[in-house]
Image (cartoon, rainbow, N blue to C red; front, top):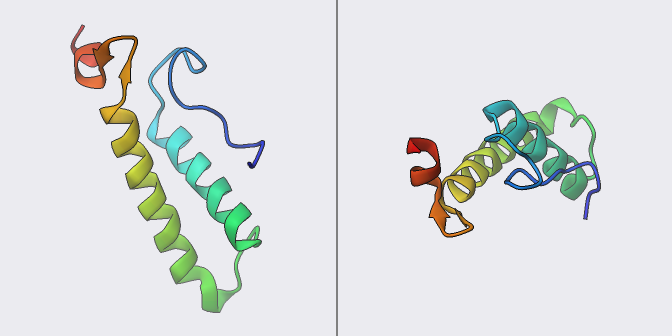
Length: 78
């Protein structure tokens, strides 16, 4: 596991994860899996699409998690 990817849900992260937090984690994941810190020009498009897809999937995951008996929706409303 990439140690620079932090947990983005309570209680580890006391506030809601921001879009910036989620994207940073996605970027670290793609860097780790691909082995590229910065891809060559011919790989940039696929690299960026992967970061976008993982950002979206991570946001969806965090929005749907139930933490301590509460859904993400009820946490935001309350």
